[in-house]
Image (cartoon, rainbow, N blue to C red):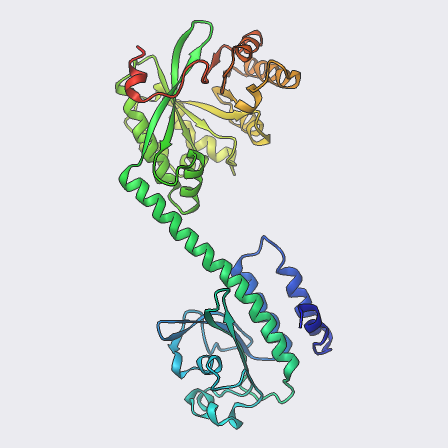
Length: 420
């Protein structure tokens, strides 16, 4: 029987008859957490069947663990995180066939009376169905019970229980998969950090008018398996709570260059807003000559509170550090950063530079940003310059600082220092 057929056959009990429909519609929202979805399923089925308690159990290490609980009782009988031996539970005996899935009155079922909980609680009506994962493994059970018997319960109610158990199994399977993925991410990131399986390279930033290097952007490169882009590594680290640690480790390695390159040359460091807002960048730069540093804030990460961001950065800017907005022209956020942060440097994104020699729209936007920078006292750096034609147009537009493969590849520290 499909889901719609089961729902069409449910009890016509006024407003409660809408609960299965309401739940299934709400569960389609991608914004809802798995916990919310499963708890709503329990609440819906408990109210629909007029039961007192509904729960999802997990079988693990010979015990039944209560993972989700919805109760209509003033005093809770069971709580999330409680457990008891599997062999003493209805759940195990339903799964292995010693008890039926639907019990109208447990006191009339001899096999139920073998369990002390039947009379101690007491248990009246009880419905329990297995939750099976895609691989056939029994995760646990989807259950409802009441301390009172209910002789009106029938096959249609059991069919609804199976429907909701199947739905819960899909949500739980997603959660289990996500947990496995998260553990694998943590293992990858921690292994990479512990072994320092990354290095820093330095790409020259060139003053086009004076034809000389004025700075280097420090770029992190990873060689751990799987080989992936730096953006992917940093995003994964942030996802599992190691974003700050990875950023600070990369910054610490990049700062070694200050002792190897002339004092007039600055180092530009990529940093997330969070690492600035939580104070980590202040600790990392405590004894560093800040006049030789630029902090690049990427367009790809939102800044939740610009006033707080300014306050956090104020002491560093007072001591000489400069602020750059990275990826300008790549999206709306970069323009908001430019307007709100009063940056010292605006770095034009490679997507704006690519084909600027043949695209009048890119030229017009670049010209507007050059004018804006001139009015606000910022300087412009063009990123990703790869052809002489692109460079020619940029110079015509009075962009006098740039970086890219045409002007210099990212270099190991020894080679970068050897340029002077």
